[in-house]
Image (cartoon, rainbow, N blue to C red; front, top):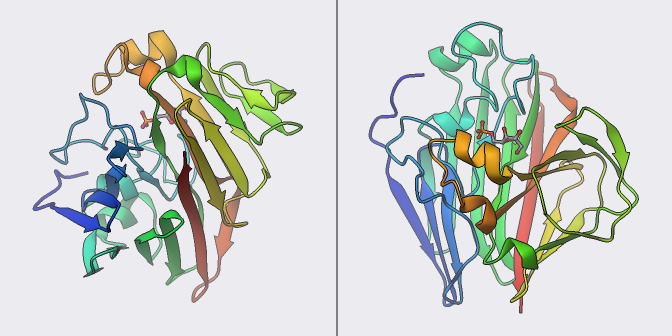
Length: 275
Ligand code: TA6
């Protein structure tokens, strides 16, 4: 991928909230709600367009992970290209922005399909709403995910709720494991894919609760914390920053979404904060 050119930032503001969006990757990098930062952005995040932003809400499209949707070969990166490209700004109002990414020669070289993506970011009374719309201009398949990094004051205070009874794939061991905890605490590296989850999940962060509501078209959730060793292995992530973040990612990753030419697909999540 070439270096991103002329990327810029958009700021949305309401009485109680401020959201910052980079046109690079259409990446939300900050959401301040009543003076509290809700999202995690690594202090070592690279913001010059030379690599995906480490934090906020990167958009994963057209493939989650190092899958086999992109044509194989050099340059096809894990998590696809959407977070690596400069998106156009379609509209910006005080509390809402819409950005667009169209297929181009670069994307067609690794993903030989024609498409348009529309990403809506909206400050609502009940939180931060983000919606991805995929317009298929040729038949295509994809997996996708909103790779949301939440800020955590103290990892020891974090509890993840709403996944009990589901079976998850543990990416660290390859095992399928049944979740038996109502409240999941993070005490080591976690990299799990939960399929067909409830549309409502929550994080207890000590000082406040975060609710994540998502569309049925995003049936899956990825839970990730790199912990000590993986933190050290990432140049754009501080060695100790695993103590201050959790990724709870709404996605369609268990099965590929298949669209025919002319079809549209929409997936959304709404994050709200409760004291
Ligand atoms: O969020 C789950 C995950 O797939 C992890 O396995 C880890 O690779 C993470 O995404 C970050 O990936 P990235 O390509 O942004 O370094």
